Length: 129
Image (tube, rainbow, N blue to C red; front, side):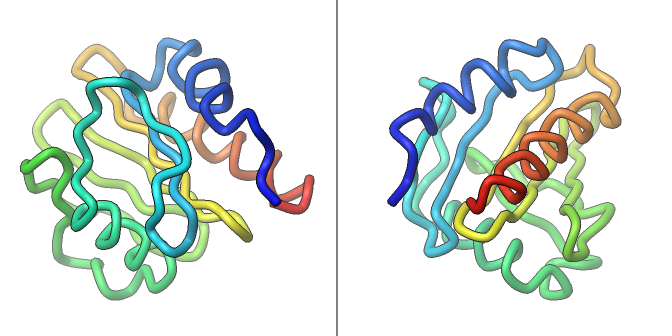
């Protein structure tokens, strides 16, 4: 049973901080639970993101594609996956039931986005999600 407010987590806990310009939450199976309107993550991309979250070593030294653009993977472990493409980037955090994706634009320090996504991940894990 998932809370009704996955979209609110994306809108209020990620994007509203100003440190995430687009966010998404997927089930660990790749199903889309919530997403920022206009964040065009294909089902194939969602599947690759959730596979990476489940087995981070598979993307180390490689990349992940978001909205058709390839991002280099800078970190991939059980805590988080960090990706960069020029000034843009993302952070992926897996909880028990969900995979959180926060993307940041060029005027944001990567660490600011990472903290937001990781904090939400910790909160969800503490609450059994």
